[in-house]
Length: 225
Length: 225
Image: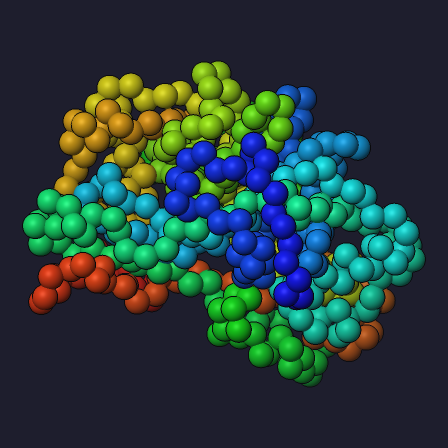
């Protein structure tokens, strides 16, 4: 990740109308969400109807990459998408139902994806995808054959039009009349962690050693170290 | 949750074209995803462009409920939506880059939301929303005033048109030539758990006791008991 500033545009879509206090447009906030996330939700319009599908992704300083196959039903040339990555941080437990909510980081990226053409472009994006969640895995496993690359539809989407929303901290009713109720209030965090690996039953005996780059993830928080 | 069978329709949208082997249409699979999930991603079409926003939800046997405010920029009367709930189960670590993937459960619900009108309808949906992730919280905190209810936009979406996709288990290349590579392969699960609660700094001293229904969640897997 470079420190080179990236200017996130404020179009009519990313100029947040609701909850303005939650809006962030700093590139480092966008990259923080993308680094910590795992699955994005891709929104497309199919015959005028919205459709949202989950997909894994990778990214560099300028683009986010994902498999074209996830949207094969829907993504035609020049189709606009919205790619949203949400980090759920926890439940905001207030003194009244009305003030309840969630703490989260959310990034929305808008634009028209480009299809990667050529082996080099596909390998570049696939490597980012593979390395995003399990660094070291690309060099550990067999890399794509030309035939596999030909069968791979890889899309990239510019990060130029993006917005980030963040809500953190305690509930907002700490100085309201409800504070007199004497109730406990605060945040209940949710933390996703890598659990114990489950070996493929098809592995030979003795089972090959778990590689260090995977063993090092076990028990750790997803993408946070 | 009732055992009453719910017929999930197979429209052109929910008749899965890709990855047919992953398609499930049993109502119990849909309810299992909704029970275990926390945040849904709501897809809408705004001026012809897709937009995807995260939102919390609640549900009963026939509908899923969410706040209208999350989509206030976009949701007009008769606007169709797609609401997707994804449970990320883990990373599928194969012997080749090409066979990598994720294990997940994903539910997509299509339709046109209805706006709840009247205090009773709003209270019904809000209670499901609040109790979904933190059962017991509705009765612990102050319930909505009439003024708060008037300020609440609550939407419901029928579960009648829904599809569920599931991928579980080891990678698919256990009997491929790549099995000869001698690499470790399998699944690296991701587990979201409730972490230690963070009290609101505005709480009086001594801090009110953490209620049992929240204390009972700590360390447990999200919505899985």
